[in-house]
Image (tube, rainbow, N blue to C red):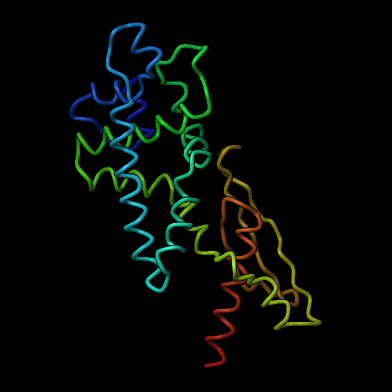
Length: 217
């Protein structure tokens, strides 16, 4: 089981017992007298915040503390971590009693895995795991809520036909990846991916605006 799970995680543990503990809910731990993941979750939560804070700090040099905090909150919120955890299939490996299954457990186990990787392989390995699994959500924050690139493009090319065409949907139901193609006057201008269709459309519009700005220089 551990080898298959390690492949899903993308990390091989030197101490497999850390992985077992990271999957053990308190309900199971108390029943069987074995360590549960709560301490690892505590550690993983801190590592997760550090990784995302560092990444946002680098990617958004002009954002103030409040804006960075809002973006981090979106990425590390429980619903996000639950979706990623389920998309990985971590729920199938959890040691948990049936009557203890709650949504929070799915987000908690993601953080406990981070904590386990940190203890076993260090910050760099934990960081790699976090960035691999949350990259889609980090990318989503690049679409600033205050910036509506689709509206800006529509204003710039008023009267011309702008079409956003969905060309592919991949990934799992919990974490789909949409590929959208932007056509302007029937000509393909951009093609982008996103974990939401609207996100991919905004990224297409943003790419098109960058092309226009470059051509006008």
